[in-house]
Image: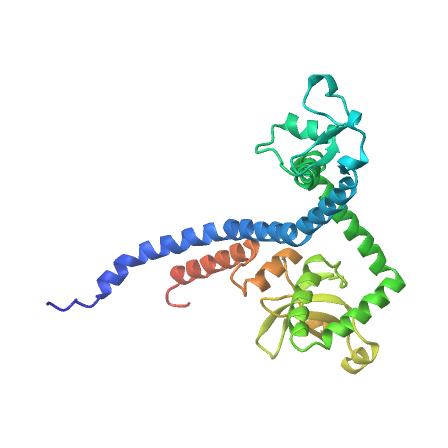
Amino acid sequence: MEPIPPQTDATIKALDPFRRAVLRGLGVLLPPLLTIVIFLWVGNTVNNYLLAPMESGTRQLLTRHFRGDIRNRKEVPENEIRDGNDVNALRPFQPMPDDRLVPSSFYDYVVELGVSPMPQTSDELIRTYVNRRFLPPYIVIPTFLCVFLLILYLLGKFLAAGVGRIFWIQIERIIHRLPLVRNVYSSVKQVTDFMFSEPRLEYTRVVAVEYPRKGVWTVAFLTGESLLDIRGAANEPVVSVLIPTSPMPFTGFTVTVKKSETIDLNITMEQAFQFIVSCGVVVPPQQLADALAARERSDHARLSNPDGL
């Protein structure tokens, strides 16, 4: 058996265009695909753990309520019970194979729907009647979504009040005492607070500062004027800036720097967040265009004056 020859540099270089094309296609496909997967996961979670229990509880309550209309033969006179003849079809009770009586209106409704096979017990007929009459999907989904949104609204109002806030703080204290739960809860809370909470900081503009040492520039958010004592020690105006951490920009460090040592950046807050989350991969277009223009000017100057004169 002949040995397999090792890959040469020419073979590896020949595969580079294919590999780059695959990675480029993967980069284009993954964002929408992951977005769809996340929304489907959220929808399934809400359905399985919120809507389905609400629907099941509603079904049980309605079934228990209408089950009270079931009668035994001894409780109802014979002239109120159907016997299969068209003459007494308007009688109020319909006998079932389990020798119990159900309201004729329930039975006729299920028959008109063409349910197959037909329920053989009174309990099955009541469940079928409740499911088809009160819990069809076109009623359940909009109604339960409205109820869910109403619950979220009332919960938000309750937690915004003083009593609700104190009550929730006590619950969180109990959660933070549980060894394993507190780690998971803290991580999830950081993400949800960043996604759904209103911003508590008002950033005035995006700046660059030399941090953590001279010669190393960091993107930061200017939050306002700093402490008066620091300004007196520096003998010039100082500002407070938030230095975010990559790739989670909602955490970071608050530092005070001299106003003269900050550089205003020509980028928006959203572009700054994209730059931080991507760890510097996503550069704002205007900054990239300026950099390319500066490089072209430098190359042109070098070619025009190769001797450096």
